[in-house]
Image (cartoon, rainbow, N blue to C red):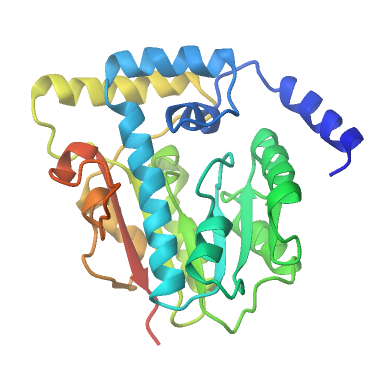
Amino acid sequence: MSSTDRDSALRAVEDSLDKPSAARVYDYFIGGETNYAIDRAFAEKARERIPLLGEYCRTSRQFLGRTVRWCAAEAGLRQFVDLGSGLPTAGNVHEVADEARPQHDTRVVYTDNEPIALTHSEMLLADTADTDRHVAIAADLMDPDELWSRVMATNLIDRDEPVVLLVNAVLHFIKDEENPDRLLEFYRGQLPAGSMLVLSQMTNENPTSESERKALQDLVDYYENTTNPGQLRTSEEFTRFFGDFEMVEPGLVYAPAWRPDADTLFARVPSESRVIGGVARKPA
């Protein structure tokens, strides 16, 4: 990316700061640098409601890294499509996948509908990635036909080879009234046999007290003031998004219980994380 293009992109970003962005708030919570005063102020007010909210966001990011690493190294998959990829920070999909497969034969398509996320992704990829194998595109997962057409138009994804489809920390920003079932059914239908579907979101399952239940609802209400309002779901409400795909062990669990490593937050008591997730394989 040229300096002129970079300056133009950053000016476009600065013009988008009239409201807190859920993507930038998430970036702030996981220690990123692509956030602004309006996002940080919102995040700290959210943290007053849920003191461990930053740790929940970091849990989602760690889950993404572990699932990508497993899909690349253990399952041997080489193609990744990240829906609603958000803002780039440490441990991006292409970095984790390439580390897991030293032959560097993985291909990654990032998609997001926020101009700021796309701008920073393009800047990151221009600086750190192999542009022959890694690309970021503007696409809205709420418009599945158009998004998938743009993914395939990159010519990075072989429609006959299994794909890892990642929808990480996104579905809690899609309310049931927006028909996420239709969206997931469409995306599952585009994947060839042997593909993996990686899903996670925050949950309101089994609050430890009435005060926690109220705090979680208060958080949902508070996010109505952002660019991305949404809803929390229980495991029972969430599992339907995997359709008839076969769950990979250990199934749909609190995210820290999914193949934890030495760095996993909440590994001793995964239910404290407030994040659920799983990986499922498309059957033949």
